[in-house]
Image 1 (cartoon, rainbow, N blue to C red):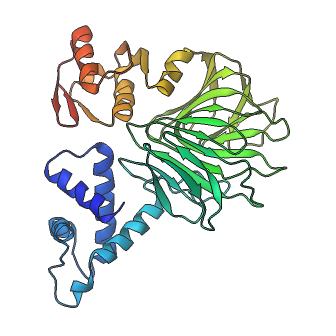
Image 2 (image 1 turned 90 degrees about the vertical axis):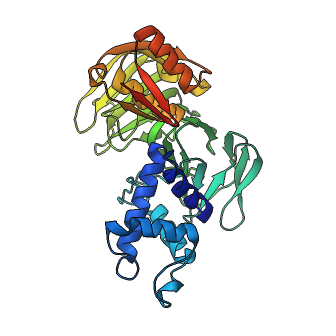
Length: 372
């Protein structure tokens, strides 16, 4: 996030048009900045307005010595803030750690091996290069393809992050295709190494079409469970705000087990095509049942389908899909199950349909949907 983007957030806050993600980003940054600089510049929560104004004006209204605290210092704090990863910093070692979520509320971003973050412009074609100028792959519009020629002798990771309201497609160096849904981060090796498992780390939701390699199992880690395959197609949903991790198998076979367990084909949960495995976060059991595969994969083509889904879960999916904030003041709706399907509709059209079919009273205020 650069100076202009941060100023835009402050301006949007004045207009009361911040999204949920933007509010979180702004609040956490301000808290960090106050903690880092309150001894020399601002003192406590009461001076947040002063902080905002000084950034917007590019001036620090302290004494002449403190005037040296300009945007360069603020930018340094932003870099530190982003590198920490908002709410998703796992420090269990490089290979065993989940991706740090780099929060950019508007852009698809990629974090390279040296920690630098680049914005992916979906309207252009470009080459992805590492710090030494070596070409890692090619980005063409809404797809990034890693080169199978970009060999490294050690595991080197990139992290791709997709904000709310967007989707992206990724092809890994082994030919595995991954569709990333809104609000998702995937950490993966630039290239896979002979003799080692092909392991990636997921926060959010993704659809995998795994290239077959019987000598190198492909493993998706979702913090609490691992999904192990050789070559198959499946969908995993593991958003931080959800209480469950769901794996839906479309084709082939997968084995599911807790990440702190050693894989054992006899004790792992083996899934059949057309079935869903559910793991309750914090629990120990993995249950399976037949799945409505279309409902779990419609998002790949921009659709969204609900069939007997509780309203509180519908709200979460709509917020991610459309990048809006939905405030439900009618809590009696939360556990009511609804059915609906949408394709190219706007969020306003979605709620028009919900009102027409289910008599859900609502109003729209900028990027907020308020349910009465």
